[in-house]
Image (cartoon, helix red, strand yellow):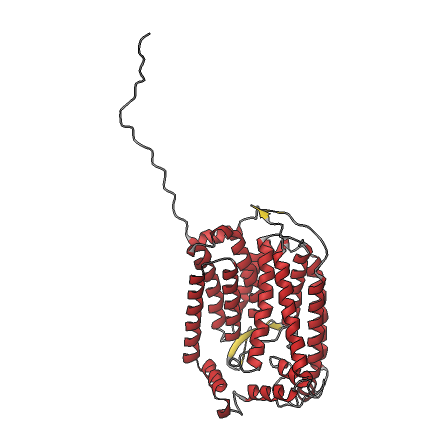
Length: 414
């Protein structure tokens, strides 16, 4: 049988090179991904709302309403001619907020994921409306409010909610890439810087700080490299320090905080009177309604410094009850997030819970003069209609997500 050998063609054939794909701009890539329809499959177990969380929210709202009534009646009579002016409005807003919470608790939270880009865009446009003459309202040298005739509010309050949603949507879309610098740090940091920079132009330092902590906190929760997160934090601290040193309105507040004895009739008056109220309360307080400092010594006691009146009237015990309720709310919120059925809903719960916790901590720090005075309201306590309604509606979203929680995280498929 003849030998048969395979003939190998030794001719050099050109090797086909893959067609290079053009690199997509990071901004366009992120935008396209955020706007693209969600094709992931989520398995959820439906049940009842988280009752402990609901009870804690109701207790905080009731406690806050009682303290607004007690703290405001002297100032209300002096400024409005009606001792019940502020509490009547607060109770109205609390009722609307409770209704909003109950409605949101029975609505499927899934619509939020689709609506997040639109909510964020509208919220950012509202931030820009602050700079439009006739719409933006300037008070004490800062332009933070918008007045649409039928309603007046701070757009930064809406943006806090919108930022939580946007960060949750971004992280859920790029979950597998958050360990990289490009997707885990650069892109989300650009979102946070855009928002914080715009709010800083309003001379609203407290909202800028809260928004930054919310954004940085969610980047950290996403699992980004801690070295880069620390670098962002250091950069923000340096920028904040520059703002304090070279901006008159923030520098004056820091000076009043460092040397209150030099300005007890000016910028240091409010924190000085706050400390007198806290010190007067002792262990059990002087009794509900018996505050001395609210008799036109502590300016607008129903607003940012209401915690001082709590300490004065209800003492250390009342203050600890308040702090304990906030701690329970935070604990329960994070517990709900660990049982959430998908990444987006888990991050929304974490972000909204973090938002309440940050504001409570910073408010108490301001009232006790641990940090310089800045306008940070105490959630559920400080007088304010739109803020209270938004807070309660956000709690309703958490309750809605808790309805789809089970004993264990059910996970999701993409």
